[in-house]
Image 1 (spheres, rainbow, N blue to C red):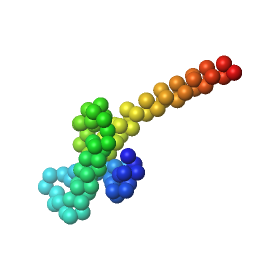
Image 2: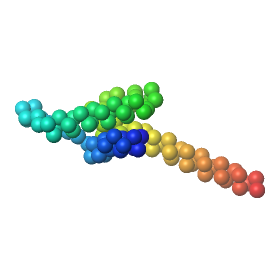
Image 3: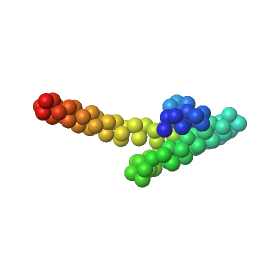
Image 4: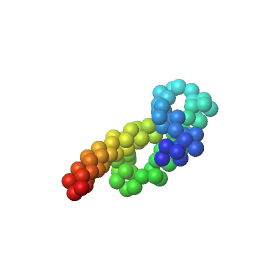
Length: 96
């Protein structure tokens, strides 16, 4: 996912985030460009996750929020994988 977002020049907006300007603040071309990039990044994130991932990020208002939500949810999965691999290694060593 990082590679795709990076290839589209969107990784910076995902990693640094984007904050909508307050009401009454003039919207410049630069702000419009950031808004467009943020929505494009959010679109790609939605396209790259499965149904359960979409449900998790449905409330995200921007790409950074969606990315952080996915990071938190998959961090637990990675820990489980590491523990399981370690247990399998121990079992394998017992056979040897």
